[in-house]
Length: 118
Image 1 (cartoon, rainbow, N blue to C red):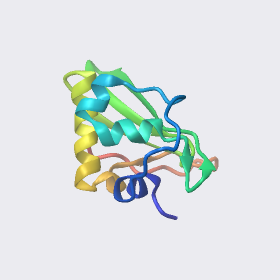
Image 2: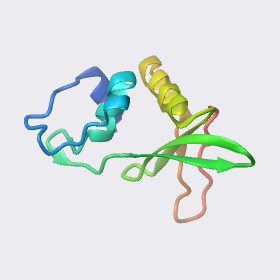
Image 3: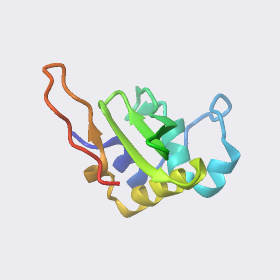
Image 4: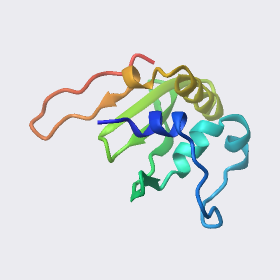
């Protein structure tokens, strides 16, 4: 199965009507590819749930997370600030390294997923 993010990066297309799509100005300026991915509501013409960008604090460390519930996977990077984490994720996208960094969620049968190395 092709990866949505890879397709978006390699074959970027502007949406036909952006009037209903939220623009996050700071993210749009510094992380345009990540910004487009978060606003992406269709994939190959089919409705698609966009990924969620968030943060978490664990053991006194701040992490920025990108979760793709449609494909049951997440990515988290340790960072100094939330925006720093967004820039790290953007760099992973530009370098084409996300495929090896995703943490696949556990299946219903309890099988462990792959851990992120970021």
